[in-house]
Image (tube, rainbow, N blue to C red; front, side, top):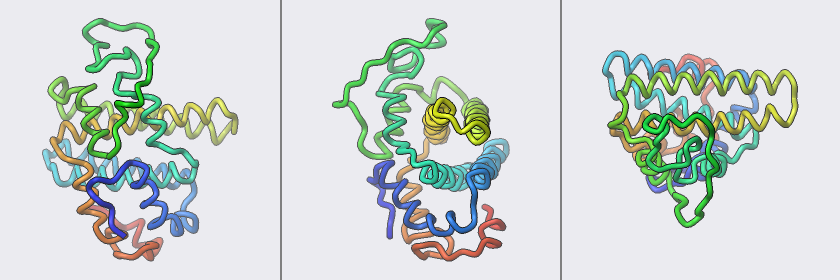
Length: 227
């Protein structure tokens, strides 16, 4: 299997399910997956701190793939949820580009959805986020801090849901997951890196480590892996 450069987010999520679904089911709980999302995300942040673009890119892609595994376990169609949250408009001010800071928006504005503007591919979604939240309006360090902030909110939402098991908490997991996706796209825009192209290089032949589908990496090898 190969993840193509013109893949959709949905196709990427399905690719992760087919390649890693079996080992994920055997080895990892939801909390384990969350830990791995955080583990590789913090390694990506180390890359930002050190000015190492390659380290940042590779680790953030692995973190994103763990995130897709987590979405699969929760049966969340993240492409659909991202579009519902960000229909080519900021989810808070309802504008493109975002005017939250300029106009000091204090309350969430109603957002209408124009399905004709919906991006189709990962690359098109990244472009959409670049237009909504231009990379020139922030530093890479700022994008990284925002990413960690949203990661914390996803973790809080999941812990709350796992503790209470109610629909309201699950809805919050969905919303925070969509926000996290926007921040991941934001970091790649700040890096001036085409996420879809990098994913296609990394996953040109099944699992990026063992090259098998489904993945046959041992638990020990998975836990020892790092860039």
